[in-house]
Length: 239
Image (cartoon, rainbow, N blue to C red):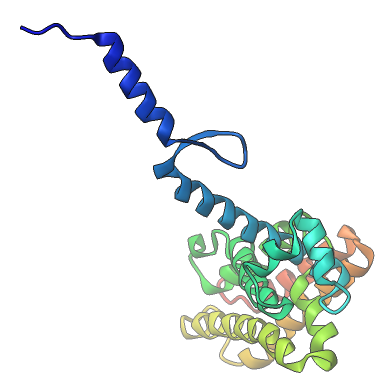
């Protein structure tokens, strides 16, 4: 049997491994087969970071007063890094809006399906809005971004304002649907006008947001939300 030069085999394998080695942008050792995966991850992280920082800036400064340079600096990237992901600030705005809506749903619809009655779902929505959404200063340091943008863009960019307002329309319809379902089950009196009731709750919710954004008074916020919850208890036939 011919002798096996184990050292020679080791050196050959080592040479083959070294040919495949690369160093990524973070200094981690990778192989060529992993390079595309690493680049894709870094690219996704950068895009996510740009969206997150733009959300914060739009919340505080507004869309018009936030420049692409502001966003680039906040995200710690370059013009090339920005425009590799977004053709324009307007495109970024639309993707940011999608992210903001996702956060809104996560915060405000939290455990809402655990409630056994539609009326209690509305109460849970109100509590979540106060405790989980408006309290989220990390993502929305300037308060509810939807209210802020709707006011700012109504005259300056009607098309963008219209996209923002679709969320308000859906929220109003959801509240009315819960009230209608509660009415059908006998939970509230047939004399209750669900259209007027949903408008009142919706307006109260937005009013609480505007006031809290302006003065950051938790006492006033609690008072407003508690008043809306008291209204629900007042029309509750099963309560």
